[in-house]
Length: 103
Image (tube, rainbow, N blue to C red):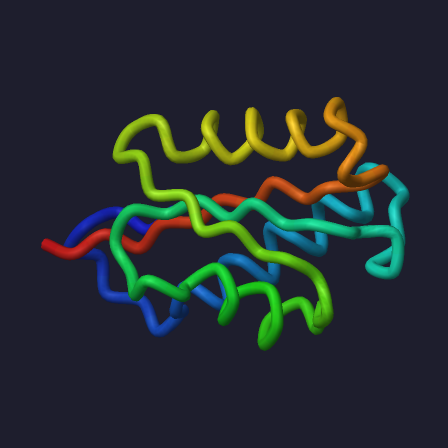
C-alpha cells in the first residue's frame, strides 16, 4: 500500500511483484502451481490485475479476476480464490492485493 500524497517512484506493478513473490515464497509454492489469480485494488485501470500478474510476476496463461469492492477488495479476492479451490476449479489460486491511492 502507498499512503496518499507520499512521493514514491514505485508503481503498483512493483508493489504487486513484491507482495506476490513474498506470498509464494512464504507458502513455498512455485509460480507454475498457480492456476488462477484474484487481484484486488480500488484505484487503477480495469486491467490492473493483468498488468500486475503478467508483467510483474511473469505468470501467463491463467485466468485473472480483477476485484474492486472498495474497502472489501482484499477479503473479496481471498474469498473468490477460496471458492475456486473449494469448487474444484483450481488446486492453487493466488489472492493478491495492492493499492496506490491518489491524493
